[in-house]
Image (cartoon, rainbow, N blue to C red; front, side, top):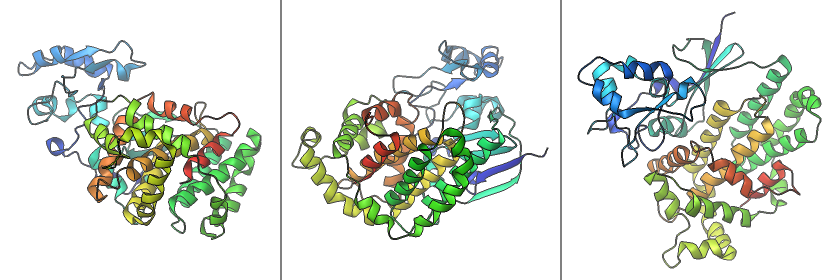
Length: 399
C-alpha cells in the first residue's frame, strides 16, 4: 500500500544555519549517539579526527534503546566537545553530513509513521525552526502527498480503526478551533476543554463512537459570541498560577542561560523584589491584571501562541497506551499557561517583537520540554483531587 506524507507547509523550508545560530543545538542537553554511529566513531581511521572522537564520546549506561547507546561529552559550558571555535561540527566538516549520528541528522525534525501516513514536523527548541513555526501570520497550513520515505529511523504507531478515527476527529477539532480567530486564544482553549470534559464523562467505548458527532456539535461554538459568557463564570486560580511561576523562576535547575534570563526577569518590577511578588498573591494578581491588557491586545503574541499550540497538537498528540486526548489536553494546557506567564511576566522588560517572542518560546521549549521532570512537576503542582483534570486546567487558564 502506498504511504502518504503529511507535513506543515513550512517543513521543507527549514535549513540549519550552523554557526550563525543564536542557541546551538550542540549545547545545553545530552546529545545521544545511536549504536551504529557510536561503533563507527570508535573505529574511525581518519587521522584528523579519530583521536578526538575516541576522546569525546562515551557509553550511555542509562540509555533505553540503541538510539541512546552513547553520548557526546560536554565541556564546562555544556557544549559538545566536537564543536570547533566557530561552533561548527568537526565531524560534519571532516567526514561529511552522512557521518552524523541519528540525533544530529534529524534534529529539529520529528517524524512518526501512524498506520500508512508518515507525519513530519519541526521542534520549537531550535531557533530557526521556531521562527518558521511561530511567525506564520495567517496560521499553519498542511500538505499531504505521496510519502518520501526518510532514510533514518523513526517511530511507528499502529492504531486500530476505531482509535485512528477517534484520533483524527480529536486532532482536527483542536486545530480547527485554535485556528478560528473569532475569540481570544483562552476562549478557544476553553471550548476544547469543554469538549474534553464531555468526552471525559463518557465510558471509553462511547468516546470512540460519539466523538465525531460531539465535535460537530461543539465546533460551531468557536464562532458563537455566547462562548464569552461561559468564560466569565470560571474563577481564575491565581494561587496555582503563582506557584507555577515560582517554580519556573526559582526551583527549576537548568544549564540554559537563555531560559534563566527570561525566567529570572519575569514578574520583576523596579520597586519590588521578585520574591515579594511571588510571596504576595495580591501583588501577583495586580501584576497580571495590569499587563494582561497589553497581552490581550498584542496580535503577534496571540498568533505565535496559536501556532505553537497547533504545531504541538500535530507533532505530539497521539492515541496510544501511554497517552490519551485527555492527558494530552493537560500537557498542552500546562505548556500554554507557562509560556503565557513568561510572556506576561516580561511585558515590562521586552518590546515583544518577533525576536523577543521567539526567544522566550524557544528557550522554554529547549530547557523545559526536553527535561523529563519539568512538566510532570508542574502538573503535580496543579493537581487537586476534587477536580477532574480538565477542570483543573480551565481554572489556571483564566486570567
